[in-house]
Amino acid sequence: MTDRTTFVHISDTHIAPVGQQAYDTDTAQNLRNVAQRVREMALDPACFVLTGDLSNHGEPESYELLRQIIDEEFRPFGVPVLLGLGNHDSRLPFRRIILGQSDADDESIQHYYSTTVRGITFIMLDSLVPGRVHGFLGDEQLRWLDQQLSEGAAGGQIVGLHHPSLPRGVPRPDDYLLEDREAFGAVLARHDVMAVLCGHAHVPTFGLFGGTLHVAAPATAYQLDPSIRDGGRGLDGVGFNLCTVRDGRLMVNPVALPTMQRELYRHHKTFTAMPSADPAVEPVTAGAML
Image 1 (cartoon, one colour):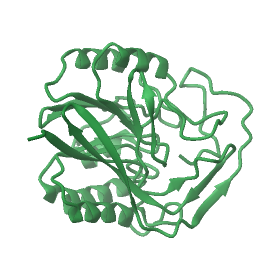
Image 2 (tube, rainbow, N blue to C red):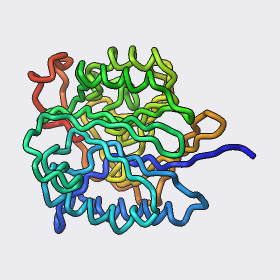
Image 3 (cartoon, rainbow, N blue to C red):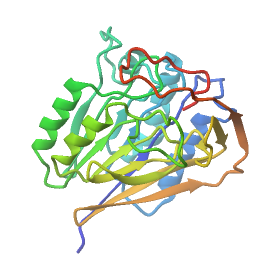
Image 4 (cartoon, helix red, strand yellow):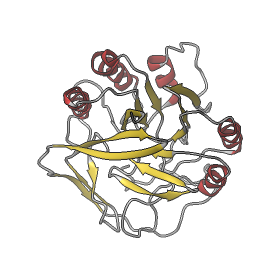
């Protein structure tokens, strides 16, 4: 009989506090609808992997609502819920409310870890740079990743983080990618990695990077039009990735929930230069909605 392990990859939930809506859509209900859709499917998920932008603006109240949704909708599956952080998140309220670390007092300390589920090692990275849209891992985290991957895993190794290293659609001057992706790719290329799971793109995106499969999940909050070259166009849409490891290979099936695909917003931005490689000098821009 074929050995098979299935898990669910979710990203960009953008939960807002109770009574508020993000992007003219109910992102909390969207996430509840994803849980309901998974319950309806003929599968036994091994875990849920959430690759960042859990909150819309990092408010403590948004993490309280997220914790409630996880407890009510996802904990009953009886499997791990692996959480990573994105550029919309804030580490301190996340640590205090979601992780229960009441003594957390330093926003700059990255949140990364590894865990093994049914023989598969999931390595969750932190590409958040406070106040910026772009992602950055840094030398210390990359060294840790290199060491973790060198240990291997009987069921394979999967890396999760928020920021992609591949653009989502047509050529654009800037897709707010992982800035130290060259160094990240070099680490991946030295090891046997089944896949890299990420978010940020708000549209399913697949490609090869660092010699491995690179997968961006459709967002649960809303979808982005991948054809836009300048600025952004947000569309009503909810999706997730159904991931199945079979005979040492990962298959990914994007799942879309029915929506009207109405336009939520449209904005234009003129790009004048590529961002600096120094994560400390590039501010968040008004046109950056990711």
